[in-house]
Length: 172
Image 1 (cartoon, rainbow, N blue to C red):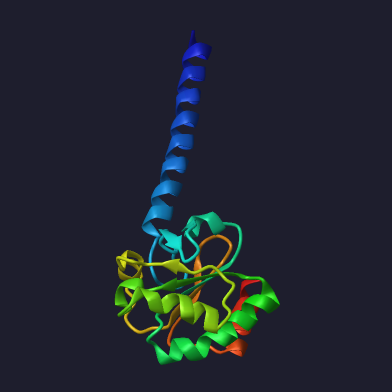
Image 2: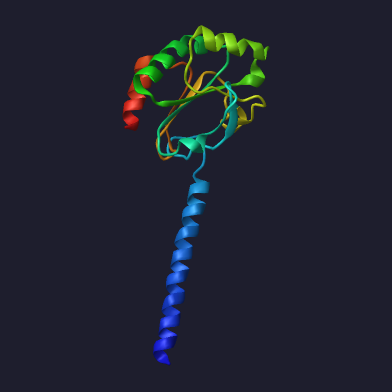
């Protein structure tokens, strides 16, 4: 009888520890979502310029460059050729989110993409939901996110090719 009670108590304690550990991990990950270096990047789902649906979490396991831009933004225009070259040279996942709600005319996006011959993924933030979630004020704004979904770098303003390569190499 004592063996049975001891076994039941031991089994209950083990079950409690397992549940406690699993619950703590979920809370820790949820609590760690934010916009600072070391935080889990907030997930989102948007439709792309080409009509597909994309979620940031779809890229878990691979690094991602997350860039917020608009066609009316002169630094964005200067940054795009470097970003396209960077994409061609590295093959890194780039989600270049157009802040569509800030555009005076949505028709400006197609000529912009064609002018710069952009081939990376361009999600459209039509309601500025993701822009608000990421607290985007100056554009361009860029985040480098590692394969675990953790923010490793961010910058408000334009990046050049060499800066992109430097941050990319840190993610490896």
